[in-house]
Length: 394
Image 1: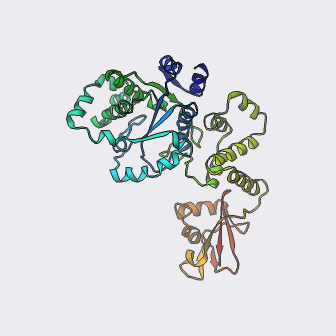
Image 2: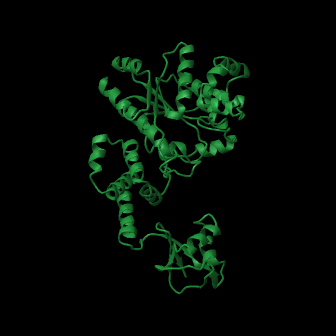
Image 3: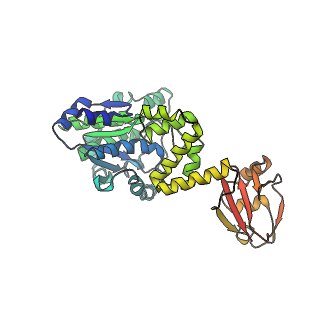
């Protein structure tokens, strides 16, 4: 029991109900461990990986993972940590986002040991009377104990009744799946405790609540979030995943070793005796391997070293035919050619890169965005910044 609790507690921020959980483990109970994710966007990120790793640890200890896809709660929007209400998603948008969630989740979780539910299974069947009954179990004063709600109320920022219902909906999920443990980030503590209260009122043994720290994003300051654009997605290509990891600060790198690779403090201290660049390459290689296999991780490491350490041009890159970029014309400006690849979000961004000397054509810097190019007789290699290469074919 003590060994299990030590593993379960690894990296946790808050662990409520630890003693009761220890008693269940001591009696040989197979725990039902709940994790809910709302499909508000199509991709899971490395921020999600922190709690998915914890759920996988429970699976490896022989317990049951209960993964809830919050297709119903996503239509409301989790107010946790928000200064304003979330944008409303349509059921169609939520359904589309949910399509890829399971395949992404099973890159970390054991598919055979995961019980999956969509919370529309029970929430969509509730009558208005059922909703009123659920709402009676929570007071406005209790809701205003939440920091985000209290702050918004003090600033006269609107809070809808629907947002008040969200923690109750999430808590009701715990009643329906009879969870023994609920996992979440630190911003989910209030919601998870509501589930504990609702289970107690239903005459059930209240779930333990275990929250994990929020992973810092690529900027090294804000939490990793799709809203902030500082994230690494499960579905990122090996190249993008490797490059993004290599872009983080040294301090952030050690955080990733701890929460994504689950390395202990003693191992991290040994890694700190290496050159930071070597340790970062190792991290990037291992994380790419986690999603795409070790061969892919080593290939990206080799490609990175070619480009950055030896200033070589990578063998593999995207290719575009001249006619597809120039609409069949025999001459075209550099900025229009690059824009036609759709690699960059705007011509303004491309012009900025060219003017800053960040664009090379066949290894030579170009400074004029309106440079006119003729249909080439042989392939041209364009390099944009340190990581982007593509080839224009005749």
